[in-house]
Each structure stands twice: as structure tokens, then as C-alpha cells.
Amino acid sequence: MALIEMKTPLVEMDGDEMTRILWQMIREKLILPHVALKSEYYDLSLLNRNDTDDQVTVDAANATKKYGVAVKCATITPNKQRMEEYPQLKKLWPSPNGTIRSILDGTVFRTPILIDAVHPAVRNWKKPITVARHAYGDVYKAVDLHTDEPGECTMTFRGESGRETTLSIQKVDGPAVFQGQHNKEKSIRSFARACFQYALDIKQDLWFSTKDTISKIYDGTFRSIFDEEFEDYRARFDALGLTYFYTLIDDAVARVIRSQGGFIWACKNYDGDVMSDMISTAFGSLAMMTSVLVSPDGCWEYEAAHGTVTKHYYRYLRGEQTSTNPLATIFAWSGALRKRGELDALPELTAFADRLEQASLDTLSAGTMTGDLSALVEPGFSARTVSSAEFLDAVAARL
Ligand code: NAP
Ligand code: MG
Image (cartoon, rainbow, N blue to C red):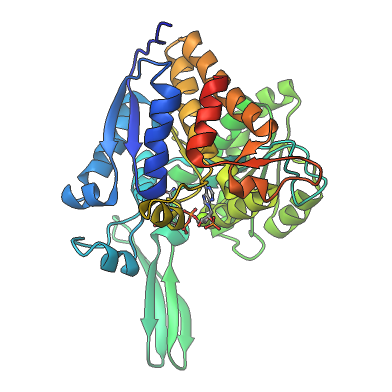
């Protein structure tokens, strides 16, 4: 059988631990037998980031800007404990996802993959809920201060014009903690536009929530920018019968639980971090959550929402077969190949991405699944728990 040709290379970002093992297996068993893969490979494993002083992460992000589509494996964000595990680390390198997000300035869309055998914990959810997470600023770019005596903390903005504004944050009578956060209008505007555009692309309603009753200026600015930007999209929303609506985050949480799903929920950076874990767990498993970063200038970076599955990796290193779920990583590949196919007008590549997803879902429907899912199936559904390799072989056979 002839291999499916590609035009533009895919930016391929390899990663760490168990997901790095899955990455190789997915390439070899599912992609390379069918596609003449053109990729520009970046090794984002912790040790290579260390060897290159993290330049490889910056290069990978810039390559994504150049080519437009990337697929990324999960990577370790080192903490103190990792310093002991990898004594050669020159420093605690920052989160690669954080670095990539700040270069691409995008919005992360996370969508659960639903299967019949596993029902969401929330019984009325029938369709996936996509969380759109703003990927710049707020607490992720905050500065923190701990103080140990009475005093006053102030915040000063010094304009380039020379004008200064100072606010008192708080006078304290003892040890205290403070935090300074920011966001940029430009980034909020592109967050809003990415959400409106994505809603039009997948033809779903868009909800947006913040806490603007308390955070009147900060969150109030998010709200008014969304309102302003929506004017550009209103006619297209109307034409498709779609709605955009804003509500307070507490109201949104209550409505999300009562809903049937099938919409996009736009959240500020921290809210999106937390809510996407809640949504994916309630839909079944973190291993069934896909994630794509969309930048305002039209770059797409696909990945799984979960981490490197460290515990399974240590079992793998001891020579055990692990039953780690590769589905979200497969969908990262299929998402990236489909987008490459769309952008390069390669219908065969797009069709391959569809077949890859269908073969994976059919394998699950036939009851062949990894342990995380077989533990969740509905009573009466007969599931056979297999290793990652066996699961991928079963998908390859269907493909
Ligand atoms: P994790 O890798 O997501 O795994 C946490 C637990 O969730 C696992 O121990 C496993 O539970 C379950 N799990 C996650 N993915 C699974 C899969 N595909 N199949 C089956 N079970 C799965 O999170 P973590 O252990 O907190 O983090 C490990 C490393 O990943 C950290 O170094 C962190 O920095 C990194 N991380 C990277 C990303 C990213 O690159 N996008 C995101 C998050 C975390 P059981 O052990 O119960 O089976
Ligand atoms: Mg999180």
C-alpha cells in the first residue's frame, strides 16, 4: 500500500517518561505504516532541555509559528524532587507548556473523548464540554511576596510618559503574603477572538465566566473586551443559530452541572486549569482528554491533557507491561495530521486522521481497553483489560 504523502512538516515535540514510550509505539504501529511522515523533530525530554539550556523548547515553539501545526508529548516540569532524581539538572527549568504558550500566546481548548461504555459521573451530560483556557498571565505570571513584620504593601504603575499611579494593597499588623498579577488587553482580545472563532468552527455555543462582581476592574475588563469583540462575530453566530453568553463563574458551575453538554466554556487561566481537570474526571478519565493550543495568528499545537504518567513509567522500567491509556496521545497525532491535511489540502491525510480515531474508538467499543477505562465501564459491558502495546496492536489491526 502506498504511503500517504505530506507537504509541510509537522512540528514533533517528543517528551518524557511513559508518554515518551507511548509516543514511539504510536509512531511505529499507527503512523509510519500509513503516512510518509514529514516532521521536524524536537526532543523536549528534560535532559535535552537541560543540555540545550532550554533552547530546544524555544526553537520548537518558533518552528510551530513557522509551520503552523505541532504535536507534543507530555513533558516533566521539574520540581525539587526531580532535582534529586536528575542530579545533573542545572536548574529547575520552567514548564515547557508555559514557555510555548507564552511564545504562541494562545488559548487552550480541552475536550473529553466520550465512549458508550463509560457514562459521565454527571448523568445528564450527553455531549462533551470543551473548556477554553486563556493561556497567558494572571497567577501564572504573578510575583509573590512574603513579609514578616507589620507594614504596608503598595502597587505602583510607572508609565513611560512619566505618570505614576500608586495604590495601597493592604496595611498589615504582622507577617503576610502578597501577590501582583497582570494581563494584557492584547492577550485578552486574542483569547476572546480564539474562543469566538473556535465556536464557529465546531458550531457550538460559547459561555464565558469570570468573577467581575468582586474583581470589578480586572475581570470587568475581560468581560467588556469579550463584549466588544463579539460584535465582529455576532452576525456569524446568528447565522448558525449559536449563542454567546456571559455569566458569573459560580452561576456557570451550577449551569454546567445541570446542562446536557455540547458547548464551549471559556475560562480565565486558573479557572480553566482547575475546571478542565474537574470536567475530564467527571467525564471519565484524564487519559481521555484532548488538548489543543490555538494561537491568534492561526497556529495549532495538539497534545494530551495528562502528564508523563510517572508511576507507570517506573513499573515499565522494572520490566512490567503497563496498561497506560494512549488514547489522548493518539488523538493529539490525529488532530495534528487532520489540521495539516486541511491546511495543505490533502484529503487523504485528513481521511487517515478520521480512520485512526474511528479505529481507536471501535477498539474501545469492542471492549478492548486499558485498565483506567475498564475500571469505569457500566455494569453489563464486558471489557478486556490489555497493556498499552496490546491496545495499540488492536487499533493497528483495525486500521
Ligand atoms: P499524570 O502524569 O497525569 O498522572 C497522574 C495519574 O493519573 C497517573 O498516576 C495515573 O493514575 C493517571 N493517568 C494519567 N494519564 C494516564 C493515562 N494515559 N493512562 C492511565 N492512567 C493515567 O500526572 P502527575 O503524575 O501529576 O505528573 C507526572 C509528570 O507529568 C510531572 O512531572 C508533571 O510535571 C508532568 N505533567 C506534564 C503535563 C504536560 O506536559 N502537558 C501535564 C501535567 C503534568 P494511576 O497511577 O492511578 O494509574
Ligand atoms: Mg491542571
